[in-house]
Image (tube, rainbow, N blue to C red; front, side, top):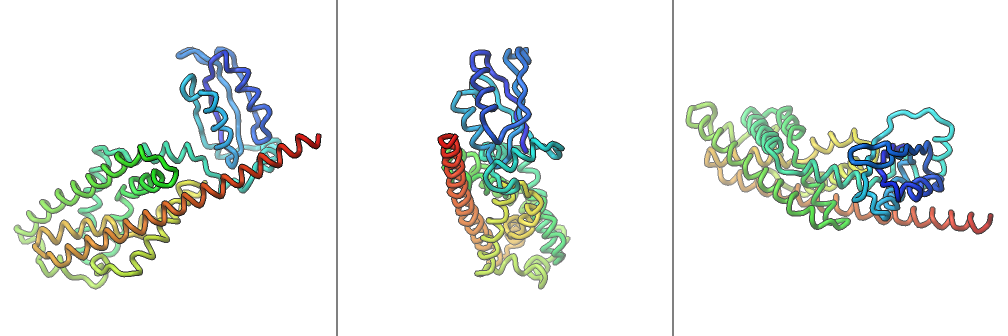
Length: 319
C-alpha cells in the first residue's frame, strides 16, 4: 500500500474526495477542511494499493492537482487492516510487481543530478578500483562497484528513452559523461604522482590474474551487462530494492574507469584502450537491456490497467 497526502484547493475538494471514494483500490480516505495554512487548502489523506497507484495519481493530475495543490506519496511498511487487504485484492496484479511511474521518474531525476557528491563518489570509486588493479585484489574492485553512483544516470537515460521523457536526457548524459571524465582526470593525476614517487611499477599496473577481466572485454561482458540491466530496472521499478546492490557489483563500469586512469598515468596505452572498450560494452548492454525492460513493463501494465477498467465497466453495467 502507498499513502497519499494531498493539498487540495477548496473548489476541487469535492471532486478529489469523490474520486478517491469511488475507487475500489483506495481506502482510509480522510478530508480535513482548511488542513493546510501555508499555502491554504484542504488536507486529504488516502491509502491506495500499489498496483493501481499510477492510475489514481493520473486521475489526480488530470484535475491539475500537481499545479494547484500538491501530491505526496509515501511507502507504507506495515498496515494491519482487513479493509486494506480487500482493497489490495481488488487491485490488478501483485503488490511487489506494481510500478508507480511518477515515483520512479522523480527518483531518477534526483539521483542523476550532477552534484559535488556525485563527482566525489565517482572519483573515490575510480581510485578504489585503481588500487584494486595495482594490488590485484577483487574485493577492492567490488567495493568500487558499490561506491560508484553511475547506475542512477544510466537508469535515467533508459527511462528517458523508454517512456519517453527526452527532457531527462541532457541532465543524465551530462552527469554520466562529466562524472566519468572528472573521475578519470583526478585519478590520473593521483596515480601519476604515485607512480613517479615509486609507489608502484608499470608491471603492477598492467598485470593481475584476478582482475584481468577489466581489460578483457568479450561476449560475456555484454551478456552480464544485459542481465544486470534487466535486474536493475526491475529493482528500481518494483518493491524489491535489495537486488540493486547485486547489479552494482555485476558490471565493469567504474573498474574500467579506474583502470583507464591508472594505465594513462603509467603509459600502458594498450590496456587503457581495452578498459575503454570494456566500459563501452558494459554501458551499451545496460542501456539496451534497461530500456527494453522498461518498455515491456510499460506495455504490460497498460494492458493490465485496460483490463481492470473493462471489468469495472462490465460490473457497473451488470448492476
